Length: 180
Picture 1: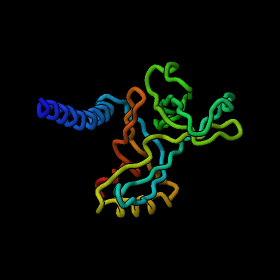
Picture 2: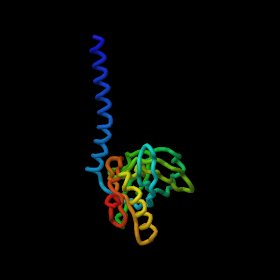
Picture 3: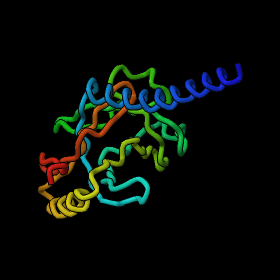
Picture 4: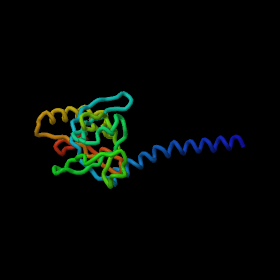
């Protein structure tokens, strides 16, 4: 009986180890396949972490929201950011709230970076775009050269679905950096 119990515990733990990553992968794939894609203007740089790998670190043009209620938001607090498309087809922040119930469709769960002078500065959960080790330095070099010219622009295509967001691609002048 003792061996049977140990076998059941082992099988249960093995199933949990498979189920948790499977669930996370399923959620991200659902966001990519069913989410609405928004373009966020960016300025990329290319750092590396020894245990994580090469990635393009993204800063976004739309990371600040002016609000009369800014005093109610605290640093590192979760917020919900409603996103819409501006007249230039790029993403803009429509509103922010402490609860997602105020939004019908396109919103992201994010974090308050800090609050200053009636403005809420937002940190999105999608600031890193991971790339193949050999392509990241070339993409960074290309991005930096292109962005020195003010006529060029970079953006991230981000799929948004029920509060979740996933970067699908990063482009400069509509050219993907994956193809470099």
